[in-house]
Image (tube, rainbow, N blue to C red):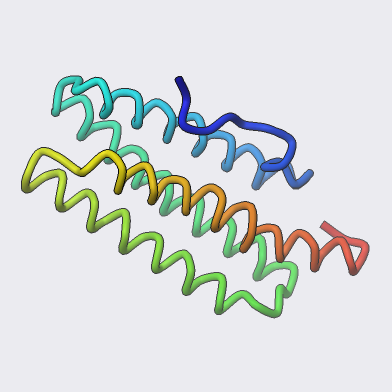
Amino acid sequence: MQLFEWNDELAFGINEIDVQHKWLVDHINEFYEQYKSFSSSDATLRMLDALIEYMAEHFESEEGYLARRGYPDLEQHKKEHIALGFKVYDLNAQFRQTGAIPLDEFAGFLLEWIYGHIKKSDLKYVSYFRSLGTD
């Protein structure tokens, strides 16, 4: 069972961003399944490292996209990315120290990321660009 299912509500019609969000959803699901099944901690750590690396690349790419288009709330959006990044790094540190993250805490964070950030914060810039007739 997947934690998230990629669907049209998560697709904004901005190919550069949609491809990255889909990758994140797919890999969050893979990581969650591996973590939930108590797979090898080495494999789980490698997957977590890849997820964190891609998250940073995605945030940089998305912020570049918003900067190139003059998004007026870019600084606030960057702050949200920083907060998400800190949470991911905290969970990573906890996992590396203890070998565990409470599954409900981890799932709650992932839900916050996908539904709180992508479907709310990211949707703000999509709505803004659509109101201007651009994307």
